[in-house]
Length: 111
Length: 113
Image 1 (cartoon, rainbow over the protein chains, first blue to last red):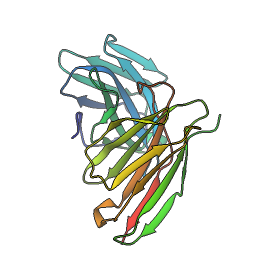
Image 2: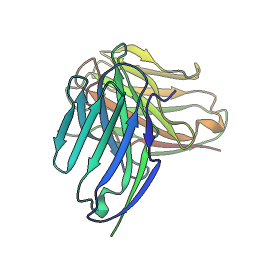
Image 3: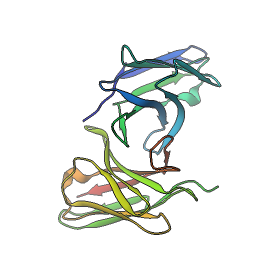
């Protein structure tokens, strides 16, 4: 079963705009990770945030984590057409040793 | 370092046949995990191997099996294929036993006719 639920399921924006994707989960976690997948290909790791962290940055990416609300958000600033992809959050539960993925957000950045 | 490689990239089989997929992790990685991705069910965890031992298994029938060799390369096997097994099968490798960052391969696209 999917631990994470992502919102929105699909997002369409113009180049240069910011894109925000949200992820909610159900159990206590060790860390939360975001991945990107271009159509029909493997996943690419973007960023990992641990349960004791609240915010993390990597280039144009900013991730926040609110463990009290069991939610995370991924912000992509100044989006580019090349950012068009599906974005997945994945959680590592404190009791587990495997990642559980959400259903993903399909981001389309129009040139 | 070379990334995770998966072979074959595409495969077409018929119902009832069996299939073996291969995954070579990044050099030095000892953990290999397998996932099935379908439009309806999303990404689902199949199993994880670490140092030739299966450490974790998802909720898949016994037709799905795997193994890991001493060089960390892994294979997964699906016997008695069903139409619903059509999917993208992704393999991911990691450094340590607890999967922090997972490095994914390009996947094997399996079509069952």
